[in-house]
Length: 386
Image (cartoon, rainbow, N blue to C red; front, side, top):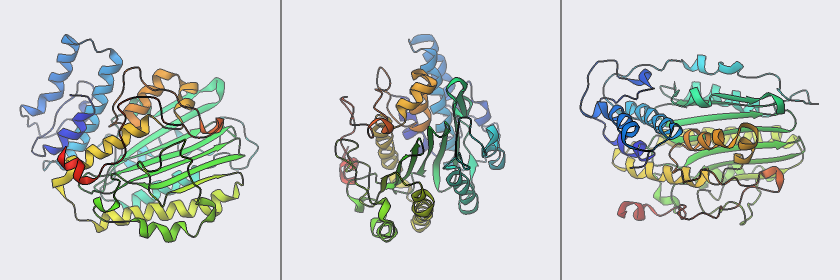
């Protein structure tokens, strides 16, 4: 069984009381109850150390995934589970967030271009989501990283709620050279709905790229719990600047992208405040609204998680910022960051990431020449038969 499969299989066993990881004791059940399954990850770790050739990085990667799986499991368990170490209010100010100035150089009065998006999203999450909690399972390794010689830094936070199994947020700051805000909202698997993806980039405060989308799990929109594109269209229609079209030589927009994706390449920074910010807010609010309209369905949870895993694997191989992370923080860190934090359900291929070209160097990455990548978004019927 591959490490990422634990995240698919374990949440299904809602009667399991918990399991431990040798390096993640903060996630142990507080009631002292244990079963044979409760000691699973401890035994797995000992077995790997004694009988396999996994290196330290691989073991750490598996343990991070087990910790995330444990948090996901706790969401569905009927027993009382321990509170996270950090409250939401404590998490949001870690590493000096929200930053007010750049680590790099800037000629602008607002050097952190996308910080208002970060701040608005956090406030919205606190006011709109149920039982919002911090997810600290990967932040010891990926909460913050910087490169002082190149004047670049990155901060990451992760949350979970009754509506979403994972909401991750990333801000990359390198002064006017590069500003990035990235966030992905994964619905709890009892809600068969698209993933909300947000990717905003600025290069030299001259070239800008924006993607905001309800990223479908299935090719056929009707295979989701409800249809949604007809509700996105009136929003998108109000913003001409956000109606760009992806080139087929980059991402394949028939895979994990909707027809109502907000996509824009532009050079006028006023688009950020005038169009992108209000459109982003409206897409986020609508995604939250859809979840509240859907009846939870525990019967399809495994299929939903399988499709979220396929989305993660597809995205990990094509993420536009992979080259940036590798250049600034080293390929080893970038590999672990992409596979264990950004897309933690993804399947890590031997040799790690194939570094694609950056958006700033001529467009988003094309499809990597690898075999075994997910072949599009199947129909729900296809998944059920698998």
